[in-house]
Image (tube, rainbow, N blue to C red):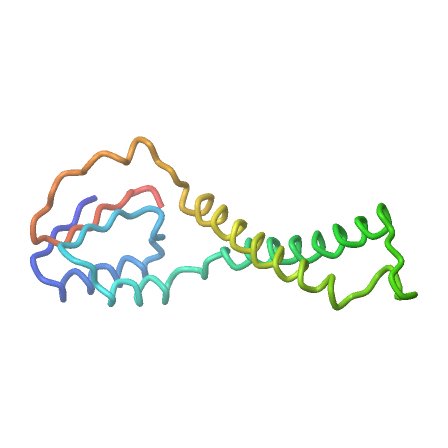
Length: 143
């Protein structure tokens, strides 16, 4: 079903009514003449929060554990005794673990964005029709 509006007020009322009726954002296409922050706030109100933070958490933990495992493996594979210090010394290992935490956290976040947004969509890379100054909501009737 397609709803067309010429003003923002009617568009926002219909969009909120659709959300209250149980329509999900995945079942809608919304076209606006310019970005509206009110639409973002409305979507945040009715939609579940993003799962992107879990990708970042897993990436960060993986990076931290990999950093400590890599440095520990290196010390035991090529031991270098310096001044009677212990082989496993946490302070210098922390630098490598921190760097890998940031690196893998960022890479996993990027991968999470691509997965959750289902990108890249080759079929959607072409320009769609221009709708002018209208606000349009296109929904799937099968909820």
